[in-house]
Length: 231
Image 1 (cartoon, rainbow, N blue to C red):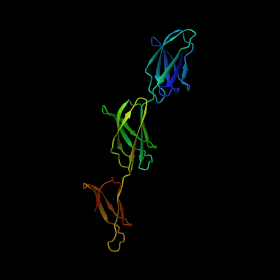
Image 2 (tube, rainbow, N blue to C red):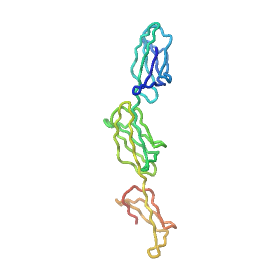
Image 3 (cartoon, rainbow, N blue to C red):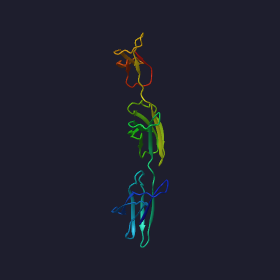
């Protein structure tokens, strides 16, 4: 028996597909793996009927669930062509406003039709993450933890996953902003150290207390964009 394993989309040969050859009664006879040409060969088989089953798909592909019933005759080769469909993956890219990649952003991916959360996923040093082998359908992608020093992107995005296809989505984060306060003498304009300020947001919530240094300057921590009062 000769087995040829191909990509269902491109027709390219696939290495790394693992097969087991069984008797019709279910006894496992041989375990083999396709080579770089997508081939494997079972030699010296007795005439009869066998069952061929894929037990592990090549990396990045869905397993072929079909069982192949093969009849071997004396002095005759049988060729089985089997295919694998690529995984359906969601690929996400996270950048800042200048297009620089951002690591450490965490997202949830939720299947839309039943609200099942597929998991939490975090961008790597290239600003990317991949959610592999999703079933076709619509998914909602939501940022839950922003990269350090950046505002969270509050807008969720819906992505459609098609069978055997790669889907892509991107998110952009803006840097958190801060306030610098300069304290000067009203007459001489000399800088003044030791002045204490409270910074509150538009709802009156205290964001922090800051004291000017020898440069007359006080700098807040990172603040979300909005209206603030320093007093």
